[in-house]
Image 1 (cartoon, rainbow, N blue to C red):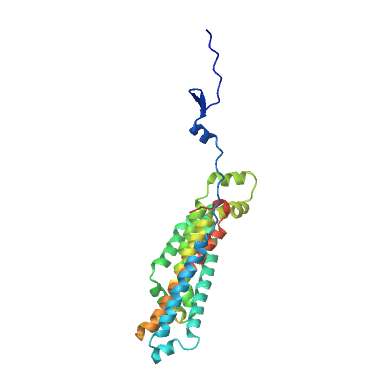
Image 2: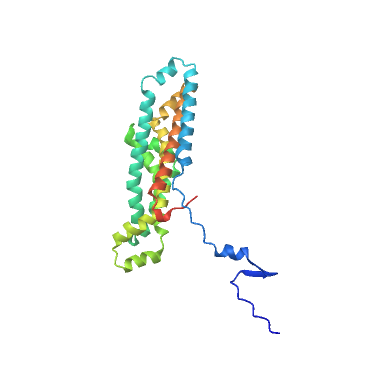
Length: 284
């Protein structure tokens, strides 16, 4: 007797004792993939944690300072608006020195990656390394001897000390670009300036911003030494606390310096995320 041919079943379906069921593995393979979720570029933890931590530290320092036993020397060191003046001078030194670092290091880094000036790269990097390898206090002393006491000597010393990270990162970022991509841009008729401004620099932005962030933190720390050259800043409070052995003044100057460095680093990290081209985002 001829048996009827079995019905053809879809792939992944089987029959056991007359009951048809579908393989779970096949069903999973046929299921559409879940929609990809896109993370926000800046999380609320990054926005709030460090400012809240710094606010707590500053509040605790202020409460301790209010309970501290201050003698006449300590009161004279922080009398009037001397603390705000020192903080304002410190910020001013950091901003001005970083501005000059940017207008010196980034154009120089671009120039040294051009074919006509590549031979000068080792010389420029040697001078930049010398600026950072020299002890900051010794460099400042030499500049004071040459330029005299004042803000100018402190600024030049800070600039020389912070040029290296921005210059080296600019060169590294531009050299890391894919040569085939640059050749393709030239092949479609883009000018050298167009290739630089529309392809090379945007791709190098992450490394350049990392160098700027490092330079900012270096300048905040180096600005504390400006007091030895008559440049002011929070170093005035620190040296006063050390020389007069007044712990409240020393703690106040040190905490403000550390808080300013952490705040600057936090702001630079936010700028690094916001200014990074969207196509180069890296989610952590």
